[in-house]
Image 1: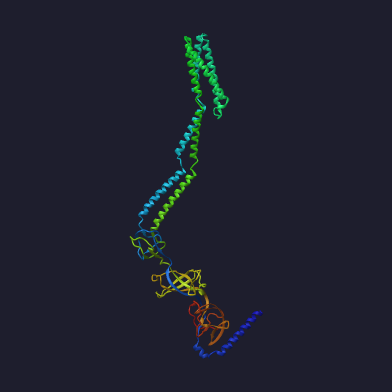
Image 2: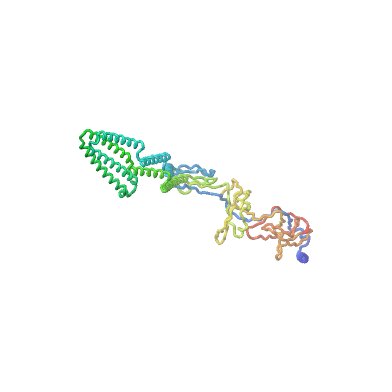
Length: 524
């Protein structure tokens, strides 16, 4: 309460002091009424702008050239043509590249075929054949391992039995006339049986690597010698037999020996060599099938994959060259220049393209003003070359670094035109007013109505021909108008000073609307 009273007293004293000053210097009532310039305090919209200038330019431009050397085959546009993104504007002669492309495609196909073969080196038919070969080798091995068939063995044994019966009948008919031959025959039979047993024992261990030093091998050798000796004795007796009986016995004995030899051959058909051969064939068939089922070799597969990648790269290089043999519009625009001719070797820029539907103005902003500007702020643009045309724009870019020239630092600021007109062309000089601040529905007075007394802003308010100095608080201000935050009310009539003090810098503030005259004194 005391603080409020204090400020009230100070305000009254200030008003009295200002009134005393005014009474001392005020002109007569009659002369003031006829010579004072006034304005009425009104509510309106106040805009603060930064004024600058620049040149109209295309938002996007491109100097297009071929990506490789060659002879220009065709140019499909002329200066002034509108094109769309993706349109082919010109191309080179690509006859040689077309042949290279076909060759690269064939090479890639071959590489892919080799890769497929590396992934699947054996067909289903080949695997099926290997399975069949393994089955056959297994059966052959089992057959060799099992020896002679039962039927063949039985037949050989039957032949021996028949020959034995015939021999015994011959011996019986001969009686004991030749006991020596009978004895030799018995010895031969005994030797044969011993040899057969020794051979059987030997066969059971024939697979051993040290077979030569075994007892079975020695027994087989001894039995073989005994048999050969008995056979030699018997053959000698047979040779000397003179009688018919001895001849019959000799014939029956020969038949018996033949039958016994045949039986022995049947029994010994599975030799060690045959078994080893059958086993080797079986192992080979197993290895072949295992190799087929194991899948592709890692090294071979990697080499095939690398070959495919190399072929793919070669193909893409040719395709890239074909793309580089054409000039394609990167965006919608207008052809502004053509520097190539059909039949000539392409070099440098062939076609220039500009987006004339989207125009920009790049202005250099002083360092004292650049911090007032922000991306997205609206701007009003006028052109020196086109009268009575006002365009709208928006700040689209502010350079983060300044450019120093002759000791002055400027910051490039880009203003994009919101719309364009046929009369607007690139290169035209443009005056740009960037709206950096806006106050709606605020009290505004001309700058000429405001004076500074010490550190206080004051305004002379006219009431019934008398001027009253009123302290005010100002807000947004510029060259032509100022926002009144407090001290005045709408309708107050203020006295304008005879001269205007123009603020330095490029920022101005302008009200929307023109103040009029009339109204009650402040606070009334």
